[in-house]
Image 1: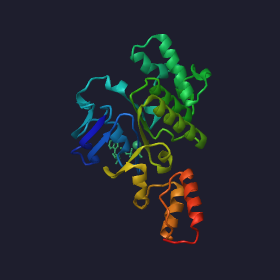
Image 2: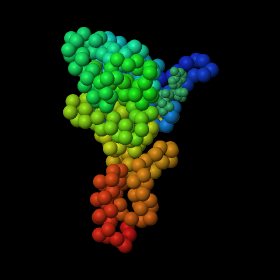
Image 3: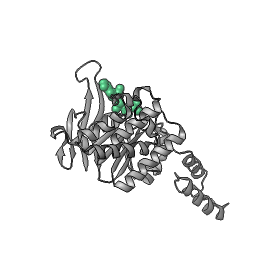
Image 4: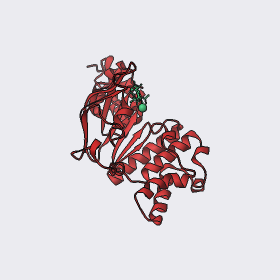
Length: 282
Ligand SMILES: Nc1ncnc2c1ncn2[C@@H]1O[C@H](COP(=O)(O)OP(=O)(O)OP(=O)(O)O)[C@@H](O)[C@H]1O
Ligand SMILES: [Mg+2]
């Protein structure tokens, strides 16, 4: 379990360009949960997640992992919490794709067969062909780099997998596939997953719980259906919600007694229910 207790993070404290990026954050991430972190650009998402493995330290407050302070714990924290950064360039540095993905497992002192196995699995996970292993990651496209970055974290099999906008730069099929892979991995391995996104539509199909950040603070937090009870507030702060949810909000405004909907299956069920009562308003 990871706990944020009154965490504030100030960049460039005391300087003219001082910036409060996190303001008194209290959050809890349970083992085995799939949590979405949503918010506008600049709301503090990347700053927040970098506190989960001690890469950034709170200016005030503390972050605990299984009751121990992340800031004072040893290096093994990196094995427990794997972060895929928002910009793959920040984490890619090896000369070949193989070396890049093998870097983590090598640091874990795994034997060479196990390392090869993990690299193969990780390549498969992100849908890249094995004949790419001897290429330089720097010669690849943005989307391929992103996949390599994800693969190199997956290869370490972290207990907590944190992904900062993992789908940016991928086309819509690529996005869908990667999210599905992460989803299946979470179900199979019971890994805790924290997925950062600026799109509500992207996370709704997968997450158990959502944290909405707005201007360095937690604006909302709850199960996906609880958050959608407040869908209008999401729209007010300018966050996108699934198009199908917009349709149902509109129906509600028109006086129809419909539930909040965020998947096509729910929409279908609601339409069928509505059809039976067609003509009856609330
Ligand atoms: N290294 C830094 N130095 C100074 N200010 C920073 C730094 N990193 C982020 N900030 C500022 O802190 C605030 C939060 O930034 P952060 O990157 O956490 O937001 P974000 O929600 O991840 O945004 P995005 O959706 O654009 O990735 C912003 O105002 C940003 O300008
Ligand atoms: Mg960010």
